[in-house]
Image 1 (cartoon, rainbow, N blue to C red):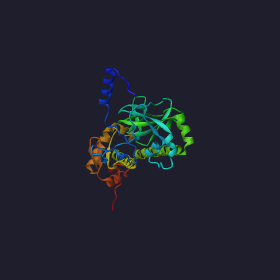
Image 2 (cartoon, one colour; image 1 turned 180 degrees about the horizontal axis):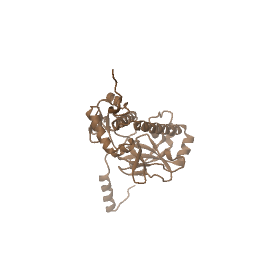
Image 3 (cartoon, rainbow, N blue to C red; image 1 turned 135 degrees about the horizontal axis):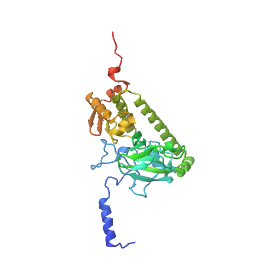
Image 4 (tube, one colour; image 1 turned 30 degrees about the horizontal axis):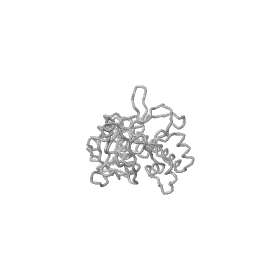
Length: 298
């Protein structure tokens, strides 16, 4: 059926198509997160990329299935065919856009589909205490389930997308589908383990040791997502890293220089290459500055 549109409406349609972002068309659901193809049609292995559901387009009507959530978290989907009928809306975020506000009523959980988000609390003086950086497969707002209020805020550090899991619908879905309950338990366990890793980082006195541990942990997370583990693109600022590690942002810059001078990493703005991973592992085992280390005497 053909519908006649006024000339002004036709111009608006043409304008919207002309402005539509090219980078988010043709997003695919793939087992390997590096399935995003470049202009040559071949997968790119040199940068962190993300993929989504087949045919999923940015917009209010975009949705994903329970099978997608399992796939994006790295869980097997062979026995999850029933989750094809369980769907959740997808929310798109631009860089710097808040997802949740600290203290707000908890209405939904959020499954990170793509991008990077900063999880933090704001002190009375306005200082942002960073708790974590959420990547693909993480579930946000689990720390608010006990009183149904957001204990932390979350903001996108780059163009990102999340699956919105309305709390009542999600609780019903986890009761009806044990695989979704296992997904939530897995996400909560990983979050606890990463909080423990952050405490381990802060046990080191030297800032460069804390930074070495952070870089190795980020590398390990990228490897789990099948991204290049030795080529890091830091989506977070040095000030955010400093907040997470409990040091000044000047210390982060100085520590990057120290590790680079030692030949362990190569730094180009926000790109960090792990040149000597073995050396970095050895460096992160030092819990205090070399000048304070005990000297062995014959």
